[in-house]
Length: 287
Length: 227
Image (cartoon, rainbow over all chains, first blue to last red; front, side, top):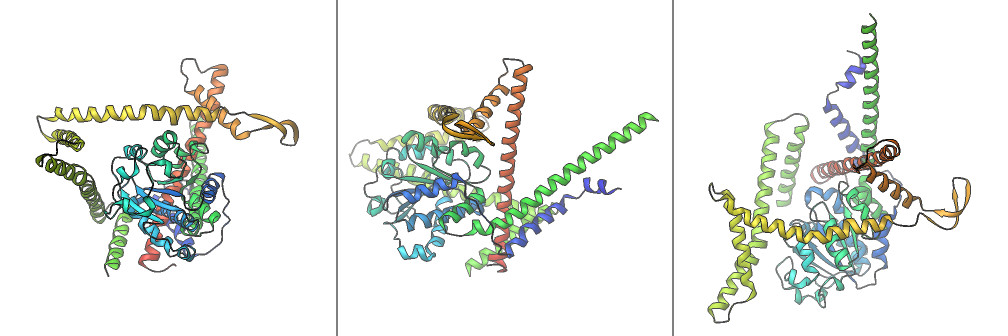
């Protein structure tokens, strides 16, 4: 068996092992990496930065722990940026675990000294309205009445008792919607039902898998897009709230280098083997 | 203490799932079955307490109390229709009453189609066409490589236009893809390949992110090897 044959019949577990090593080692390193900011990420950061203090924003968490590795850093950074900008954050979710993920993100955001200095209070500066079933119909109904769609917060208390919800009738009271999405229902539904129908300004943080689907909505239907972990890292970079997105980028880059190397090696081996087969075929035909 | 137990369970289950990469084994099967069961149970309990109980049971209970107190019939009785449709959907489980479930299914399909008809047209057709029809050339002093031009070329808009046009030609089957149409369609396939490649690249990034997330959990939260 030649080296080429060995390469073509390589046990795929060796590939898994190399990927595991390439992902693990960078997690122990603290190397600086240059992160360039794309217009899609700048669109979200600038929009949030330019909202007047006191504006109400919706943080729609449509994901679950399965995609938290990619999306949770976006949620944390958005909360930090919004709360330090003195925006009032209304958290909700069309996925049952979404608002719970937001609670975890909120706990992390509140430990940041810059957020702690603002001392945001529940019911005044932020509120968690919890999960509401009904997918896109929930968004449609929020266009008529947000209090009717979410009469109680995540802990079952009447939302009309909280100052943050005073005067909130529909999307006209909402300056911006930031949707963190891992699939359906998610960004596409927010664009279709809140953005295009009720003219609400929307930005999104999406899983990398979903990102190509939502990029066509930028810049008119979406003010910005955070695509996967790279988007999260860019967002952390531009806002100055360094977090997991930035920390994980080295591991991400190393894993990508290994994948690219395997693609190149695999293709070279394929073409070499094909050439060898043709040569052998020619020799057989010639004899 | 409970947090520590939770971390240990999560770590062992993560290792159990990852063990499939070596080869299929009973530990992986156990973890997979546990995950499916817990997910199904979580969804059932979640939807029951956040949907059926407050919206159907409590609303109908309040409406019934009001009716018994002589307060008349109010709009909350409409929830009864949803409840009946839900029960009809479960008829699918019966050996002879399966046809009954077609009625609520027809209702869902019809209402969803009606809901999406305009929104899809607006968001995914008209708006996208609007964003494609932008000036390719604007007034001003531009440059192509080193050649000065008396106008500016919007290269983003140019590529979007070429990609959209040639992509549409590729899917236009009323003319034979030969000569000019064939060459245009071939350009369209290049754009499609780039699109598929970008999607694949993003998918790889997504999967790597999930792996990084799990490894970070194992090294940081479980083993405390990183900070």
